[in-house]
Length: 235
Ligand SMILES: C[S@@+](CC[C@H](N)C(=O)[O-])C[C@H]1O[C@@H](n2cnc3c(N)ncnc32)[C@H](O)[C@@H]1O
Image 1: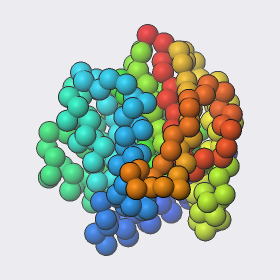
Image 2: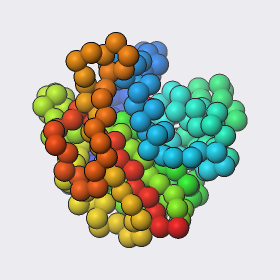
Image 3: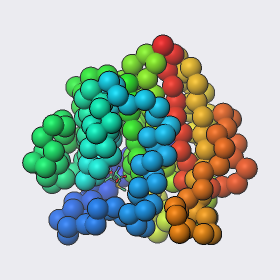
């Protein structure tokens, strides 16, 4: 786990990185490889979330807000999209006024508490930029009974991800499946949790990733490129 010094540097570092990216008019899929990767990542997250209609949803690290708008389209009762970069929040507010957009990060406990509680909390491609352990602990307190945290995150055990980690010199800090499982085991009131890998497949003509079966132990048979997991709270 990152120590607190790395934690604060990490937030500054990624804030600067994404500020530069947003001022350069990024593609819709930001720093993911392409729009199909992004679409499938949203799809696996929504599948792991279960029903959305009538649920209050939080999208942490919302980027351009596509997942948030999708959740609103699935009739979430309210969607809150948050991101650390003011430019993208301002642009989302202008484009999608039916959604609540707030600028802030999940490591700021006061900010997180100000958002209220949620039935579904999504962390799609953001846990690698934060202290994922304290972030999950903080956000778990904001999950309503019967609610879920759902995430997609790079897998620290994967060789391609390890190359990216080396490129970003200790700022890109995704979890391994076993680290995640250990953290989830320490959370209170967990009703159920499940993990799966999503890994690039050879024939990507339809979709880039192949999802492995769900497991509850965090032991995946192969170090897939991404991890998708859901943690459900007792009702
Ligand atoms: C790879 S993009 C993913 C965006 C969106 N979830 C998606 O999948 O299209 C990562 C996003 O996380 C945001 N981010 C990075 N660090 C953050 C932090 N500490 N708090 C909130 N958002 C953060 C970035 O500004 C960026 O919009």
